[in-house]
Length: 50
Image (cartoon, rainbow, N blue to C red; front, top):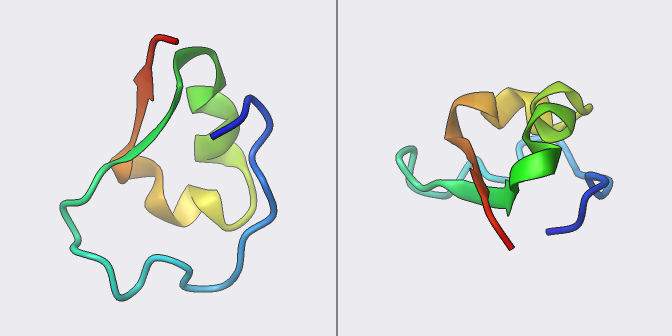
């Protein structure tokens, strides 16, 4: 994933396991958690260091 959250779609991860993590660059975690569509999955978003 990039620093800027890509556009998403309604329920884009609905059919994924509820405990599956979404890894994004550490410096972008807050952006993803606040971004439209992505904010629905804020508890699953985790950062990683490049």
